[in-house]
Image (cartoon, rainbow, N blue to C red; front, side, top):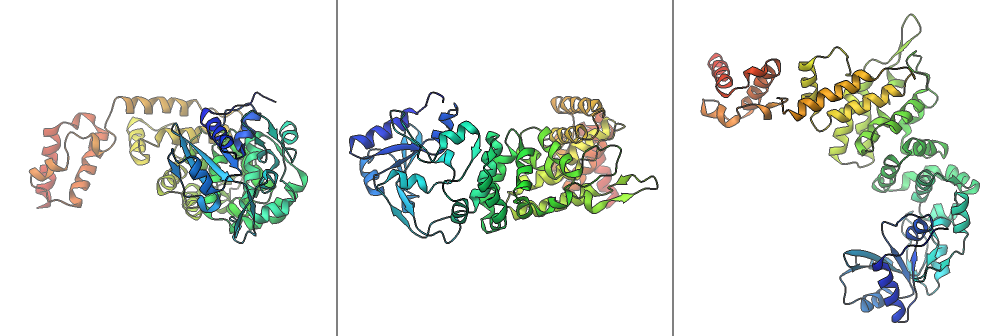
Length: 448
């Protein structure tokens, strides 16, 4: 095992607890990550001290008491929050997440026993001594995800643990132990009882992992996908009946997911970009499959999926645009057409769109040539860097100028600016204030 790491703030909390006659241990992910040779992102402490006692011992520090009901006090030390929680033994879980009542304990092992997986159920004192009652070190060394105790009981207490098990297996490239795996498959339907926001948080960590495709495939293997993303089930093994595709539809989408950059909206678009192919198949006289309109229908489908999982509107809109536009990759598109595409997609998303199209093409046949897409990205960067006119914000006039020459406030202003933008996209030389104002005056006189 690797040299163990404890932050200065973590040591301070553990030492202070000892000074006041209380036990204190680092626990959970920080111990696991340290044993794996990784620097933990945060440090959690478990202690024999009750919440009021914790507040008394650290009365000189800023304290966060939102979790006091569950025994947790956040202690601010040098800008770092150390979540410090009293040893607990849980009562019955009636909502699949929180115990009906929290009973504090004086027994560290009893506290560790209520945790989800063995690799998260280890504790470490300030001197680096490890308490490993449930074989966490052995499972770390063997690359195993195993529940603490009986899997069915752990998953009944908190249904989200099934999804967390998949996330950990994907993150660390571990295997899910047989009994744990079978219990997830058996109780997968119960994931529907978990708040969508909690599911989304776990999914996001899978999407942003090193191997998101493996994580989604694990969702399928464990039956969880049928209840989280039921829309994907019809893509399993789906033959695209195309000489351009050597993968079935599901594996093509996983491949695309793995080959886009690590941005949440782009990873989600990579997974779902062809979701509507199963709904749009037509077969020509040569037996080749076509999927006309799958981009538009897929964009509508993904909006419903992401709303169901409570994604924010910015993410939903970005994913919708990427899927809606992912088939617009004509090699014949000239500069004017490219600038219109940038306007349609948006400056913030246009390069993401081409990253999606490149990944999509890479995941068809091995011999597909993506050079024109790479060259198109270079063209786009040049257009953006030289600040060429893409939309009305690049015009040499604005709404105030139109009002000054007689336009009324309202929608007519926006429509006129859009009209002028289209003219400038065709001829950059028109983007001069007097020329644009003269055009606007002529249009105004025509309307009168």
